[in-house]
Image (cartoon, rainbow, N blue to C red; front, side, top):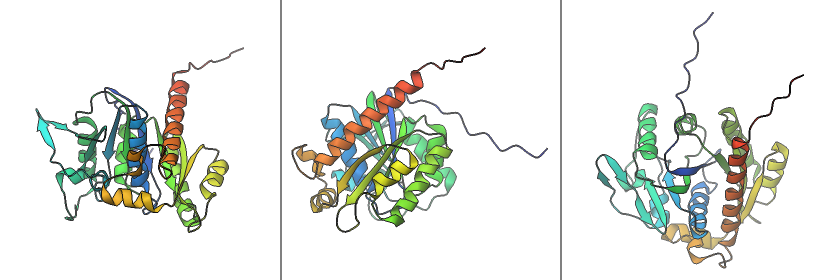
Length: 268
């Protein structure tokens, strides 16, 4: 009998946080962080208490997208998140600003992710949105194995190259036994096409959460630190993010209700 594989560490809940949502993608360049930021802001404008964790340690873009370049403070070894636009936010970009690259191996990544999850004063939150790095690497593995996620949201563009990698991201969540809240199609329109995300969701029998168009205002908002959702649901480019937020909230409620439902065993 060969040696047994080491067991994954037990999942530990984070006190005060109702729903933990991981936003992932199989590849970079699909607008995953843009979706994460605008999803979090839309939920906050729908009167939820929301935190936003930038788990993309190598490429932390959330401070730029939110226009937040503030120093992080600590108190009694507890990190105080930056509060901006109604969100509580934590990112490596606050600790290591600028263009200096981080060259870390797996154990260091695991350590910083656990610090961001458990040594930040998140307080009471309805949602903690976690912006994962692209791909299926160490950060994703560390987080999914140790944190009881409510579920994952997979971001893709309509192109087949992106969809191929999106299916891998879905497979990662499923292999690690995390719920899939659904797929969102970003950058939909004449450039990349449309409908691929919905078709993929249908083929994989998972929910489709919405379609976000390829809009210049969305890109400008992220570059300027003023995301489009700050201008409200009546702003045309922002409206799909509010639809996405409602769909994510609904799916989180469904998953929560299903997990609380007692299992009935019928015996002869």
